[in-house]
Image (cartoon, rainbow, N blue to C red; front, side, top):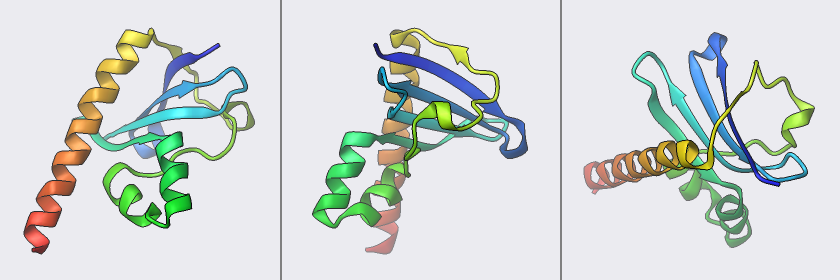
Length: 111
C-alpha cells in the first residue's frame, strides 16, 4: 500500500515529502528548503534509476535532485505527518515545475 507523509528536519530547515511503497521504499520525494519552502528536490525513484542506467544521472540530479536510497524505516523520519495522495500530488507537481524551470534558466544562462 502506498503511503504519503512529510517530515520536518529543523537542522536543515527542510520539509521532506515522501511517497513510499508497501515495503517502505521511496517512490517519489520532494524537499522544500528554508523559510520560503523553496523546492530543491522533486525526484522519482524510477526516473532516477533509469537515468543511472542510461548514464545520464548527473543531468537528472542537476534538475531534480537525488532520492533516498534506503527504505524509510531504516532512518529517523523526524515525526512524520501523514498526507493524502492529493496533498502530496499538489506539492509534487509544483516542485517539479519549479525544478524544471530552474534547469531551463540555468541552461539558457550557460548557452
